[in-house]
Length: 67
Image (cartoon, rainbow, N blue to C red; front, side, top):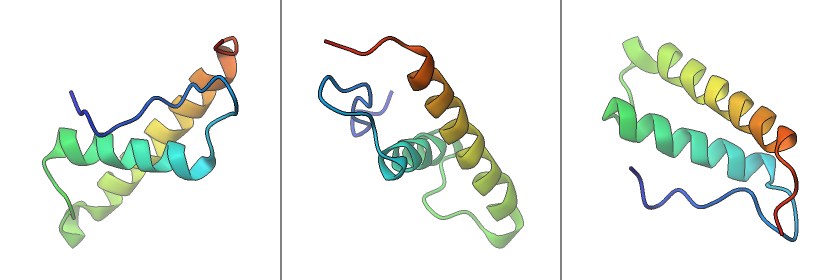
């Protein structure tokens, strides 16, 4: 879907909060079609980024370490 989102399950270190947030932001931008949403859509956009970042962290914590 989006080639600029890089893998976050790394063999040598866990993903940083910044990396998780940036991946979530890129995903929401791609899906919504907004690079910068209007003020009317900003709250929904930000909430989606935070929910996706949280789900990503939860998933990464649940997966075994990559080798």
